[in-house]
Image (spheres, rainbow, N blue to C red):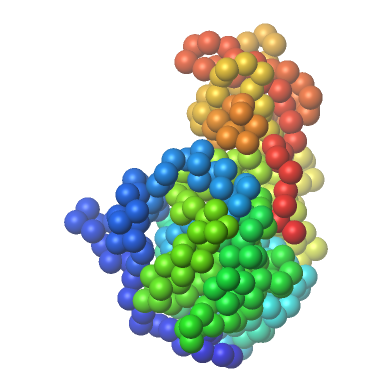
Length: 383
């Protein structure tokens, strides 16, 4: 492995707590200087927005935006049999990919509920790098640690790395402008260097646009951030916060753990059954998920598009023509691209609702008309 191998960097600074006990990104001072508004995400104080949600959202859809998502977890599973071990735990089938490829996968519990959704980076049969959600990193690591064979070691690298997401139709141009490669396949990753400093460049993202996620060591995050924003001025680059990240992912129908996926919402219910290796002989939650698949899920995630001025919001009841509750909104927002309210909702399958049907949601006691659609709400450009 080269010097950007995650096992080489076990003592990098980052994640320094603030007075409220929240961790801070190694880029926190840069965000303050840019006038960012902050919010708590998974135990971290992270930038919510800079110039405004719509401005940042539009930049990602039309030019390029740069996000600091260093709150995302990082963990290394290493040792003889590491890939086989991870494959026996997490839902997706690592046998479908190989070294240099990444895979979206799920950590489920025995009931088939989702502990977390995460990305697995396949370095080698003895080395898998995981990127879970911030709030769930400790639990994912704990479960893996409890199940690991003696040949495998689990290392929590949550604060050792920063993660910068470069997303948008001009993202490849921006990487080229700072001397980083961008021509690898979707869900592939390469090890590169920026001004002599190792950085992992991944063709992944959470916006639906062509994009990359860059993983430098935490202490090298600031020079890379500065270089991206400086080189991107002529491309229309914008620093983008987690509020725009949420509107972008909602337009794509991407699930958010804790809302659209959870211990109570299975992969089948969340339309994420494609991330399950159904033919694998072993993974956490396999028996429960196979039983649910056989019986059919009792509810399923669907897209909602507003037909009036109402905006779906999490927790709102979804109603049928008779006013009976047939589901609940799990995610919802105003779509800056479509200029309408959009949302995701868990709908009872027994209600017989399908794409194209018009139903209603309860907006503070008023019935607001929506149309059921199959996400995404805007075209995908990830490839």
